[in-house]
Length: 434
Ligand code: C2O
Ligand code: CU
Ligand code: CU
Image (cartoon, rainbow, N blue to C red; front, side, top):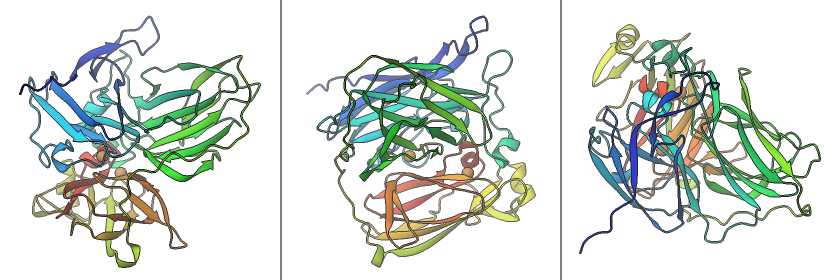
């Protein structure tokens, strides 16, 4: 039987007016010609079936970040699939078990490809829409523009890699430096905020409005949490907020800015509206569970090291032990457990169904946003309980955190820093579940 054609997600060059009007349009690489790419929406339980076509000059692959996906569809070139060559295409076809705010992005030469604009929102809708008046997606990014309004091509810059990563000089919300939204007074908004930046950590403030954290990294919280400013969003992290537009002065009420003082905002113009709500929101419905068996979990540790200031004494690269200087000559400045970059050997091998406690120690002067593909982890809290399920966890300089996960998904799963230059510079390995 002939199969119905999949809708297309075309990766190719495009341009957008990002710098002030009299300056040149900025050349981008996007999905389907827009920044962010097409917002993909499916109902929970539906199959995702899209054909990715590559009209870029370079090979690529697309990762569906946050989806507990089957391994062959995970989009990691050289690990889960062959790269899609220029002119080629790949049919992505997989189940969508988890409702939530997820996203998709290029997973090849990602410092460059994500910076040039290859990302978009992937929304999986709950079976019953929650009681809100508006559902808005805000994809936040920062890009580095030169005086010619073009993205600077210094993607392999070793200095960025060894420091905080590639930090841009223009902050974008949904592709625009000045994002504006119109909302009704007294509306309850669902804001789906996605950090698509290469390396920038955003903090978010609500200027005194009532808000609740409903989900983190797409996974619903068992109980909504009242927002206490500021909310930190590391690269790749997502937050679903419900916000009540109650303040009379609420003209521009969502701010985002980062720790180093870079500042931007999305402004909301408030139009007259109905009656204020008084009730706190009910939690979003839970996703299927893969319970973590903490009592029987295997303990494992990972040491994250390298970067400017401390450097690497030595580490393995492709099976060879090299000095820090030799590694740096090959662009490698980070290591996980003394292994720089991914080679044929997994960081861990775990039996399917086993739970793992993973102690992560950051022995460096920079933060890292550690992301696990294919499964979610939860932080082990000081009281011995588990925090919410997430797919990306931020570790500050010298910080140690312990997470736990249930190895419920067979395959080779990337484990890497989502500060993309850190990943390119060696902070990426994989976990094998068999
Ligand atoms: Cu969102 Cu391996 O990445
Ligand atoms: Cu991912
Ligand atoms: Cu990092």
